[in-house]
Amino acid sequence: MTQVEAVESDTDEPDTRERLVRAAIEVFLEKGYGGARVQDIARRAGYTPGALYVHFPSRSALLGEAIVVEGQRIVGQLAESFAAVTPGGDDAARAMANFAIAESGAVDHLMLEALALAARDPAARDMFAGQLAVLAERMTERVEVGVSMGIVDPSLDVAAVRTFFSAWILGLIVHRAIGLSAAEPEAMAEVCSRMIGALTPR
Image 1 (cartoon, one colour):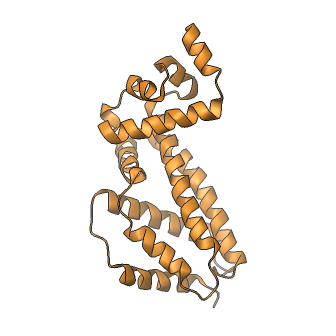
Image 2 (cartoon, helix red, strand yellow):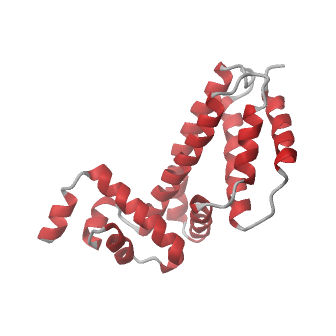
Image 3 (cartoon, rainbow, N blue to C red):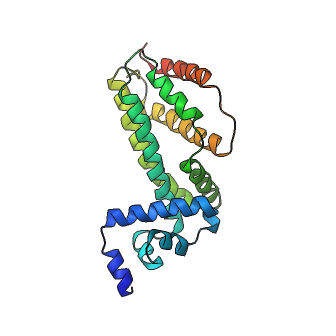
């Protein structure tokens, strides 16, 4: 390790990792995973490649963390939308509908890059599965909140409800990333309302 790399690696680790992940997101979106070089990502963040490897062993590890960072932001936004939901209201359906018809964003394209890489590389697939497990834990917490609020029937299996919503979110991300047309807002809200209604206590 050079003196410059040593100095860089001694910087505040959370800040360094965040800068590297943000730089990676930008470079991946500009050049795609295959065209993104570690040197480009490190330079964009203001570090050397050696300093990058102190925090991430590979490009795929960077891509995985980028997905988790963006994914947690999305789950957080949905969680905020659901925080003010009252049983019997249509706030939750509206929040889901807004997510379903939103324009494609960074995480959509990052997810497509990750899926393509995972299809070719078993090690990357295992790594992404581990990273997405972090988001699954966050989703489980939100489902449990829904149970406590009376929105989700406590007789339903929490893991099954989480899996349903995780698959719904991932499916919508891919749907948007490849540019498929979205439904009208009111129509989407009606469908989401019926989905939520099926989960409420009988």
